[in-house]
Image (cartoon, rainbow, N blue to C red; front, side, top):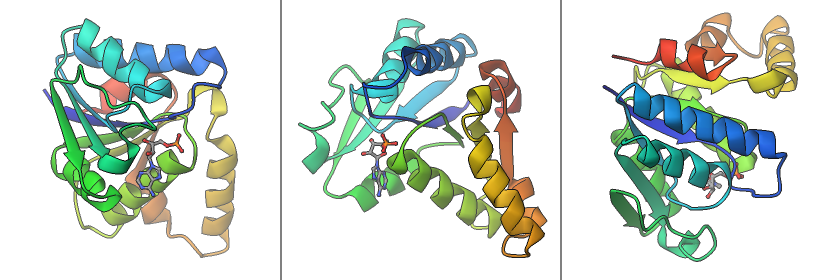
Length: 178
Ligand code: AMP
């Protein structure tokens, strides 16, 4: 059983398919016996993952900075809701309290968190898996950009190899530590 940190969109105004994807992820994590760490908001895909995971019996941990409590509607139903003083502290608590990081579709907050965990893994600062759920090719433009950077020697192939790319929720599950 792993503590799975899920990064994903906080927006509610996205195509409903992504809210469904977040629900599917939460349900699958719970069914496999994993616990779930999120940004601690009830909004967007983040809220869906946590609610679905709990409905399947998973333990959920939400980590939210004080100033986002009203904006992202702190998830009072989380088994453990950690309210931090700063965004930096939020990220540290999420990092220390998770065994693996999974990025679902999201916006700049998701990308920022994904890149931080990926770059630190590629530099050997931790050995926790970092996985991108590339649902329907959501991350294909990013991948094309990264491969171009690799071709022009801005990015090492070894760094690209550090990031796991999963096409489906089932593929993510297969990559998780037992
Ligand atoms: P987004 O992908 O932009 O919808 O954001 C997803 C989550 O990332 C939200 O909970 C944001 O609070 C969080 N987030 C936004 N900016 C940052 C940041 N600089 N560092 C860490 N998390 C962030």
